[in-house]
Image 1 (cartoon, rainbow, N blue to C red):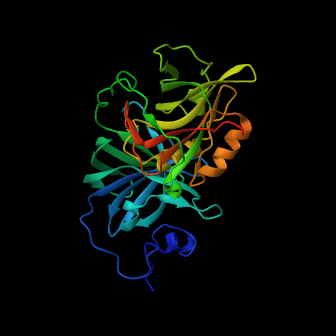
Image 2: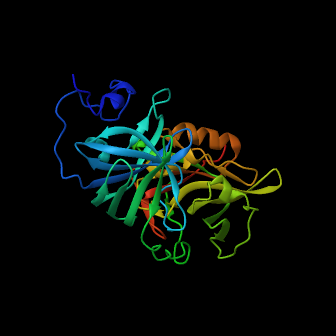
Image 3: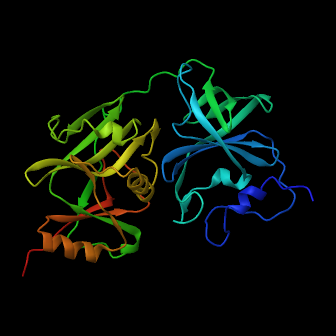
Length: 330
């Protein structure tokens, strides 16, 4: 019997235990060989999966540093098993213990044109919302390939912070009734601040317009040198100032503002940003009463309730985010 292109894919997955599409054996769908997707994969190590539709499957490479934007720099691209075409729309959490366990989010997708496709060279033109241009993939020996940008670098994106203001919560006296629709955080009572990370440097702007804050010099390395914009509070812990991170607005050139709060927080959690001068705050989906009890015991001023489906609206004060003060002891 002729081998199915998806045999390897199926052999690595249990359909009953993974949210990924696992189609059964049979004829492969016929497409136009013009779809591509780049997925942000928070597995044991953060990487990007680059997939090109070809012959009824998605031919795939794992790219640890993402697609290069500068033609002077080639990036490693490790071939992986062919994936089903349905995977081009997949986002979700692959359970611990399963192959590829971790969060998968779509970083970009669009159409592409094939200029050349052989066993020694794959040359394509991408038309995506985040990445466009001519790229070539080629083997370098063993299993490894490289990916190279053939076009000049795209224009430098604008600096993140100018004009970007924190999203603000509305005041409420009580927790929302539909707690299952919210994620809950502790309001630590610190100074609100945004932090931009790019080219090994950090820039912090507090809500009062100043740039005074903790030492964040090691944050770029913690972010794997990926450009990012974070939201959080500056608080004092044990006499030292610490940046408590509550949200992520940009990552690796991609804007996350339109993603729901739930997905932004999951991305942030998978980055594991925990150091001496910065910490990722916990969040608790659907459990506001327990969070309020803990906040009361710790003497915190308030609890924040954020709708799981809410986008990030810079500078807006909306009912999607609520600030509920901790009631005084009786």
